[in-house]
Image (cartoon, rainbow, N blue to C red):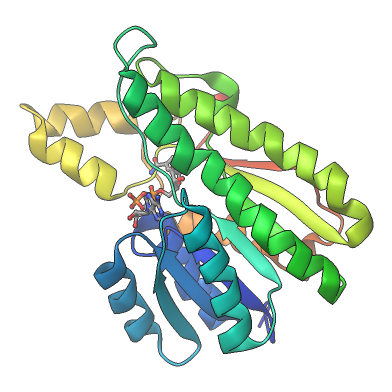
Length: 250
Ligand SMILES: NC(=O)c1ccc[n+]([C@@H]2O[C@H](COP(=O)([O-])OP(=O)(O)OC[C@H]3O[C@@H](n4cnc5c(N)ncnc54)[C@H](O)[C@@H]3O)[C@@H](O)[C@H]2O)c1
């Protein structure tokens, strides 16, 4: 019960890493507000998890939605101890081929979304005497990949913002860390495989990106998020926890 009596918000909790984190947070004793822009999807996940979980439809790029999300966690569960900023997505493109609108839309979710959620949650945590934030960055924040310029830049921003917030809020007893996953099976890859002319070749190349020659299951990333969110990580702040099957060690 590593999160006994804690209250958490997890964004992007309707699927993938966020859904897996919600499952283990509940198992470890937390009460969790699951936030996602996929309202019906996140409601289904919360229903499966039972009375410790509740769902809210939120676009993390919208300040009013984020304010409503933080208020709802307090109204329903009485406090806020943990914020997991996990909502995000990728798009293909170099800086030349990425449309300006697509760049802005991705940055509004992947980077500004983290800013907004922290902006609203940190004063609540500070007033309570502390809290902890875990951001889902990516190993591409440190190694880069081809044809994902906007995504790589957004995750580099999340990694840097993690350090800035760790410094700014250490005195308020708020720890801020990020996880840096490598390739992790998600709805994103489901779609890419379905649309690929040679799905098996695509999957083999995905696996081969890491020396362990496989992708992660979402739970393997969620376990790292759990550790950073728990009191076991009480001396960890400003850190990036890379969980990528050795991809960035190459
Ligand atoms: N899957 C990977 O290989 C991988 C690797 C490194 C980092 N990540 C990061 O992990 C995080 C989770 O991704 P995943 O792989 O579980 O993907 P996923 O697509 O399965 O889940 C992402 C969830 O975020 C939600 N979401 C997207 N935009 C949102 C918004 N504006 N407001 C609220 N919710 C929103 C989606 O509806 C979805 O439920 C993302 O930040 C992603 O960039 C993923």
